[in-house]
Image (cartoon, rainbow, N blue to C red; front, side):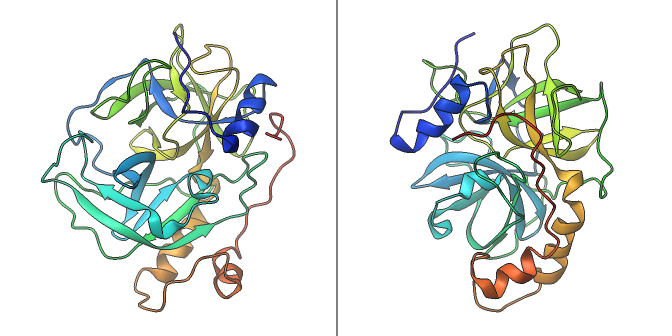
Length: 284
């Protein structure tokens, strides 16, 4: 299987170095998957800039989506658009709803080790729920998934190094593994196949037993290596923090503030999960 990558830029140097050294590299486009049935996953969102998809996300309340923190790291969030109800990104689908980002909430994200790779985005208005746009179900705090559980990963990323991105959403059946996995992550492999997530649109959901248990985060050893598991940020480790943001800000009509602004950060990050030093070599 070919390895997928984005066009090189200086900003990617730490990521490429990390991959060569066996450390974490940002994920996750689907390699070796299949086309999803239209709107089979009505909670998935596309994060876009200048009309182009760059990351996935999950609708977790009518005006909040969940994604990977590294997707927004270093970006002006006001340039991001959140698209719900999409299936074929190359068509102007009537099912689509588009939003701006009003606030961004992080929780101790470390861009070097990719610990706490979770971000909550507040939308500028409420989504209209219908057959094509639905709110995902999340696990309770610390109620994660164990070894051998079957899940589904999904995304719109490239299918290989020399292949273009797919027009329609792809999905892949994966199995949870606990070996070589950090306690703050959910890790998966595809048994007896070189398939999995890869460079591209991180932030998409990992669905296990009908719940979104993971957020596409990073890989080790190359795309679909068949040896190293793919890593997702564990939603169950952040469930209380996520719910606290939704409760606090869902009906708030105050001014739009970025969480790095001290007036918001002290509130939004008050339930910070401690970062752990155990895990793959940090990207440096």
